[in-house]
Image (cartoon, rainbow, N blue to C red; front, side):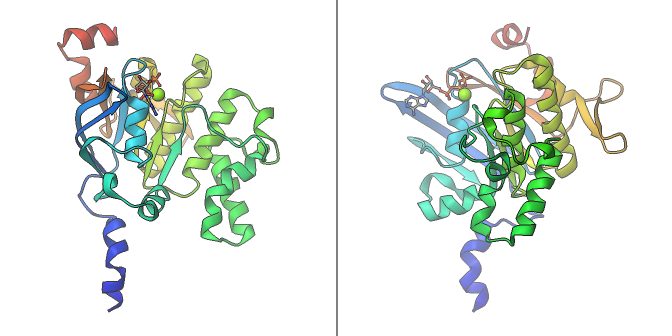
Length: 280
Ligand SMILES: Nc1ncnc2c1ncn2[C@@H]1O[C@H](COP(=O)(O)OP(=O)(O)OP(=O)(O)O)[C@@H](O)[C@H]1O
Ligand SMILES: [Mg+2]
């Protein structure tokens, strides 16, 4: 009987060793007013994969992430996350789904009136953890992004790069099964961008969490594909012998359509004229 009662949540909480993909976007289209923003978009993200989403501004990248965490509904097509159809979920199911997803928004989206520590911990409140445990988790998440000394500060006292790191700490504090990074380096200088990409690499290589990473910067994308986190030195380094990370794949969107879906190797060897021009 207990099994029956739990069967609903058991399907939502896909088994950890399941071979089922984490995200399946199938023939999705969405129109705003009269403008088709995504047109027949299909792709799959496997467990443990880091999927880089590249493409010109306005191509529908952010809309795609909002569809995946159920903030928007497609006009046609379906989106499955952890094996469940997001486009038909009710609010309560969406709430449960989002508790398993860490989201880093395009503009950090921190609450200015509360401290860094409270910004990072707020998603834990619904878990009703003892205060000491919440505090320990906040310190751990901030330590991961090397900002544990900012716990008492307010977002306005931090630089743009630091705010972005706080929003990464907030996304990972729940140990999510999927992380959605929307342009985590947008608006940052190249050196600060590299420190953010290093964190994405560290998260990828330490926890192997399935991730989608939007970026405009092709350098960031290649850095992600060609680097690894060395647990002995605690630093990110280039993969030797021009190696590439096998878990990192690409999706290129242009004007709402998928123009590329494949590995780093396939991307750099693509003969598609538009893609070659875009990547050059
Ligand atoms: N809620 C909305 N209502 C109407 N139009 C929208 C909405 N959200 C997005 N759009 C439109 O959809 C298109 C794609 O937007 P989106 O934000 O996904 O682009 P993007 O690829 O993330 O761009 P950028 O690289 O600048 O972040 C744009 O033309 C945008 O104006
Ligand atoms: Mg965007």
